[in-house]
Length: 85
Image 1 (cartoon, rainbow, N blue to C red):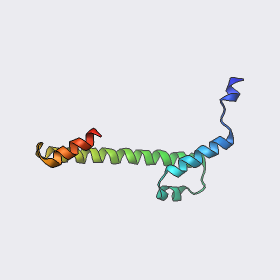
Image 2: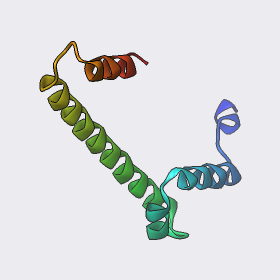
Image 3: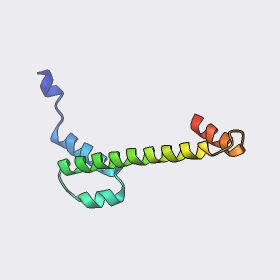
Image 4: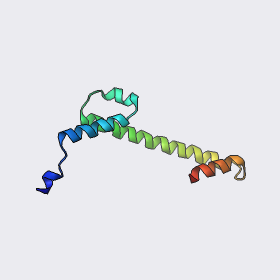
């Protein structure tokens, strides 16, 4: 009986898929159109992986910038304050 209460209806699945699709950037949504949930999930995973790569790249660039900067400079203090936020 409890497994029936925990089941997600088709309507709820469609609503969740719609919400997930709305989170993707426009350029990625165009590639999907009204495709299957499977294609949407694959595209979402691909997008998340690209975001991870972008975060890693930005982190590396920030590390390089900090390494070349005078630690007592106003710019270094700005960066430190942003990282604390």
